Length: 491
Ligand code: NAP
Ligand code: MG
Image: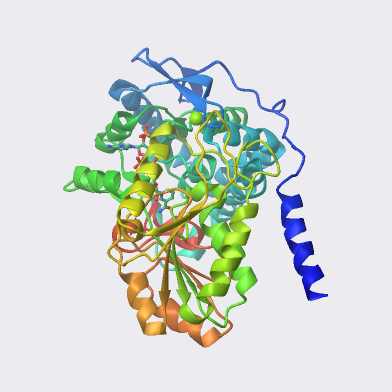
């Protein structure tokens, strides 16, 4: 009987990796051949006259040309945002502001499919993720902050919260539309105006959002969306008439920004890199924990700042966890992000794939044991097999540096104190996960782990009402929840 059950399991595994293709239709996605800059409520040609391509990383095909904003364009956008702030937005009753934010949320819901498809085409993440996670969270974020707009005096009782003015916002490529929502929604709810720059490789959903903002009749200049590379971001950071910089991206660029604004009166929030510890105790529900590890590092190709990229397993369950983890990795479907069966999509860019390969080679050279899924990879596009390293030392670069890909570093531990020390031994402090049956253990760890977000018996769960942000080199300031309002107010 036991033998038969075992045979069934292995057959089931075989069947699950042979699903028939179930591609999402591209017909809902209307992508223009060329996009200009969204300034003062209109799409305008860049004064640089330059455009750059954005491609689909799963096929390497060009999707569109996008304007490259220079310092003069940034200046134009900031001037539009300043005028809109002075003349319209800061004077508008808060409940009227809220109506616009609600309208944007509703329009995102109405066009959810189009947003999901474009997010997947431009960035490479599986359609299941953009459809079920990113886009619903984006709409929820706008709904949530619309609700706060006319209740700021209740959020900050006995103080008189005042908006800051013009916010310059710079976002990365791993959650392009979600990061735009995290930035724009609280800024508008608190009465600020915005100049936002999406990442070079994933500008399209932010530009689609610009179309919605135009259709929503939001007063011109309240939100300006300009595209470009690092130099465009730097021009925003250095513009003298910006009151607040909100940045999400790498620790390296975060440090540059911190230096650039030193000595100015610009307010700053930085949401930077991470190297999260996912910790499994022997009393954990092991099957759920294995699913949590997979969700934490392999879904979205490990392109998650709070990815559970370090795994700590208590020695007594190490063998069981490793066996189940390797079995599960073998069933992961890697490939076409537009296929609804796909678990692991395309790496966002050639450059990022090279970075990941560089780290895999470092791990091999350090003599770590490597295991990778044996799945076939598509011939075109940027793909990486789910990979894990065992026998990892604390000092290994694989355990210390952010890889931002589907690569897991595994270590073991015996006691609570040992794992707390190991987990905290990193320059980052963004997130962590704890898997155990005991509430007391969860509380012990959450008080001692230096991480902004700690999940217990789950991983990578987001909600607009919950603050998010880091310690140490993962940055400072919080986005989401009531805390996220404070970042855009003088109180
Ligand atoms: P990045 O290279 O730092 O880029 C982030 C954004 O900054 C992009 O729009 C980029 O433009 C722009 N930029 C580049 N150089 C700049 C400069 N000198 N001044 C101003 N802006 C500049 O990061 P990434 O590779 O796109 O994103 C991955 C990183 O983001 C990871 O480290 C990840 O952990 C972090 N992240 C953190 C969070 C969080 O909430 N803590 C969330 C998501 C991601 P280009 O695209 O044109 O280079
Ligand atoms: Mg792209």
